[in-house]
Structures are given as structure tokens and as C-alpha cells.
Length: 253
Image 1: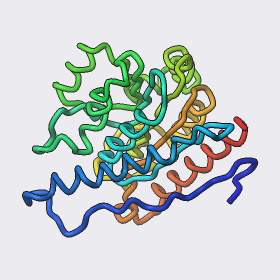
Image 2: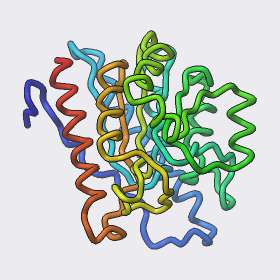
Image 3: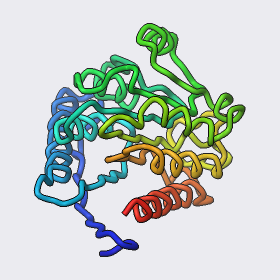
Image 4: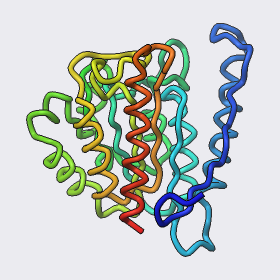
């Protein structure tokens, strides 16, 4: 179908394995195989060397662990140094969480291990819940992060300007958005809500500003759990984020 002046193609679902519990021996291998299939789907979607314009990949999760294969596929398909912006209540920098390296607490750590992402090309915004090890890791690697209170104090325009200063020179940027970057009053339907987040307006303006200011080539939107939100507000915020991104892409074209 056409969205404004550019084609939109639904590539369908990559279904996760069913019937396995996290404590079963086959769970981790099944997840690894599932991630391999996602990674290959991303490479196939982005490797369009004959196209006159590079494609933009929008992926909808799922919990945040899905960013692990999404970014790995992105790093294989896109040439040159890469940047990454994480909008999240948590920095997601655990090496291992609850015995797994493929947890939704680990995606940024795995992204840095691809060898395609330098710490200085990472920007994290909206955080307000940390593990001591994650804080130590960010300080040691000099990863720039803006807690939610700093985003509110600086204003969205200043945050976008900082992102442009740090990342706009790169060939391609990956944007990952955990809906819990928004305050639970705006997005209660998520697995790990944390008070003190961005408003819906701030979330929308920040995502739109980043897509307009940076060479964003791929984005994911994760951790929306409609069953946890009888109001439907979380789902509507997620839908509006998708609409805003499509509008930005249309203006790009």
C-alpha cells in the first residue's frame, strides 16, 4: 500500500516458539534459533542494493529482547559506522539477566558486542531505573545518557540537538523505543512501568524530532502489552508513534 508518497510493505510476523517455559532446558536454544530467523529477515528486508533509495525498517515487538536480533541484522545489512538511540526507562545493559544473555534487560549490551557500534555513538534518553553494574558500565564506556528528569529540564529540542551533534554525521542510526519511556499515567500497559517518565506529548515530539534530525534507517517499538491496560491508552500511544514516523518519512521523500 501507499502511505503518502512512499510504498509500505508488511513483511509479516516472525512467530516466536511456543509451548516452552523459561526454566526448561530447551528454552534458550529455541530463543537463539528464533533470533536467528529474525536476524535473517532483517538482512533480507534491508539488503536492497539495487533500489534507488534505501529502505526503512519498522519492527513491532515483542519484549525488548527482540532488539538483539533486529540490531544484529541491521549491523550486517548496513555499511559504515552505526549509531543507536535508546528511549527507555531502563538502560538495558545487563550482561546476563535471570540466567540469560538474551533477556529483555540485555539488548544494548549485545548491540555493543556486534563490533559495529562504538560507545560514543550511543545515546540513551528517558531512563530512571538503574542497576549499579549498568551505571558503572556507562561511566566506564562514557556512554551518554539523559535521565527523564534531564529530558524534562532541557526540553525536547535540546535533546534532539544533542543527538544531532553526536550522531547526524553517521551513515545510519538505529532507534529503539520501549514504550515504558513514557510515564505509566500515559502508558500503563507495559511489563516494567516506572513512575516519572515522559508525557505522551514529549514521547511523540522526541521520536519525531529524532527521525527528522538523524539518518534513522531502522526503528523498533517494543514492550506494549494491551492486556495490562484496560484503558487502551498504551496502544493508542504506540499507534500514534507509528503514524508520526510515517509522516516524517513522507516528508523525507
